[in-house]
Each structure stands twice: as C-alpha cells, then as structure tokens.
Image 1 (tube, helix red, strand yellow):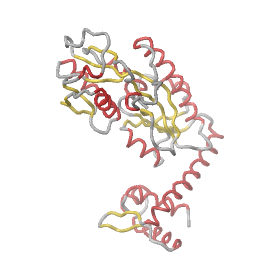
Image 2: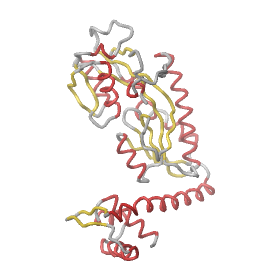
Image 3: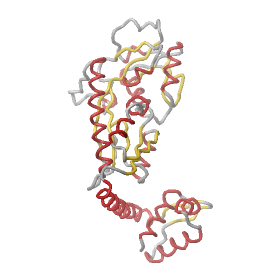
Image 4: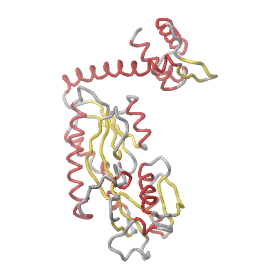
Length: 318
C-alpha cells in the first residue's frame, strides 16, 4: 500500500468519479485506475462499485476511508509543522465563513489581521454551515466561522461572541412604537427569511414555533441585504442578527425579549500541532469577538444566558 495510492483512493471517494479524480490529481485516468487496481489487489478486496459513469464505495472502501483520511491528515500535519519551523507565522490559511457573519464581523476588519501578519495569505470562502463543515472535514479548509453549536464530536469548537437577535420592522409598523418585542408579537406577520440551509433561518423558525407564533413566510433568499430592503419597503418583517443592524437602513429595529440570541465561534479539526498562522488568526478572532461583544452590549444590553435546564436550545442559540 503506497501513500500516493491512498491519495488517489480519497480523490475518487470524494469526487465519486475516476475522471474527476484524475483531473484533480493531474493524472491520466488510465494511470489513476491502474493505481486503484493495484491497491485493491494489495488489499485483496474491491474498494469501489462502478455505477455507469460514477462509482460508490464498497463496504471495504468505507472501512478504509477513515484510515486513509487519518494517515494523509497526519502526513499533512507533519509537513505543516516542519514548514512552520522555517516560516513562523506565515503561509496559506483557508477560512470558511457563513453569509450572516462574513459581511458584518469579518469583512471590514480582515485587512487588520493581514497588516499584523503580512506573511500570511488568507483565502476566504463564504458558504452555508453544512458545506463549510464538509470542506473542513475533507481537508479543504483550516477552520470555519459559524453559528454554534456544531454537533460533530470530532471537531474542536470555540466561542468568540454571543449576539442578540432583533426584530426588523417597516417604518410606521404597528409594533414600531414598542421598546421591546416578544417573539409571539410576530404572530400573523409576513416573515422574510433566508433560504433553507442557512442556520439563521432554522433558528428564527424555531423561535417562532417555540413562542406559538405562526408568522407567514413570503420570501426566501440568500442575502440579508435583500431582506432588509424589502422590510424597509413594507413587504413584511424579519429577525436579524444584531451585527447586521448597521446595514439595515430604513428598518425599525427592536430587541426581542427572552433568549433570542446566537453563539458565534470557529470550528477546526483536532490536531496536536496548530500552525502558527492558524493560532495567530484564532487569537485575533477572540480579540475581535471581545471588542464586538462590548459594542453589542452597549447598544442592546447584556445577554442573559439560560439558567434553566428547560430552556429551549433553539432560543438559547446553543
């Protein structure tokens, strides 16, 4: 069993295709197929079932997958550890961020980190949580900034801040005169939400269900900017993360009572050695989180975490 054969095996398993795997590895397809056959012969078991133009793992292939990822992951980690000894806080850092965090927390401040560590090259990917976690576990990202918790026990999670969720209303709305709203006040309103797959959408709908509110969904989009523009025009109401308040021009924003808040943090793969560039970035994230938390508290007040075991996880943002 050769290391390059394991790498080719993982490429086929992840792409579901010998053709795409060969393109990814920069090989001719017959060469890659030959290496897979040699691996199967060495193991004495078939690893893939051919299904038309695609393939799927056999039980033996499924068993090998975790070991192959671990072996190649350890090799990558060893190379990064040795590379770090030569370059210190330097190198490429691949960061995934969900769309309801990147524009409001990271976008205006990322240049600050790059000035502090000019030898670090940061590549940012904006995607929904599930896709970021797939890329993280597949080795295509170094860390992901998401809403917590992430219920995958093999990942390391660290919270950087907690923020309120706030109601966004059109000017002149019947609820705009109130200083604070309860989730059940949104009963019967036209609710503007993000598309399915966004964790904020799931949290907002859980908040409504828990309060007994039956708000009517009339829009699904991938952009909070679209939601705030439509709220300002009078089409409906929405629930936003407080960090997006500065981009909600034309909307009336009101805090929601109770436990309407979310936890924001980063997740990464467990590893014995964290490259200096990644360690510096997560330290900077924590500093940014503390600063942002102070600003949120000044505007919206302190968040009161749930102190009862009966509290709803969806409302607690946990």
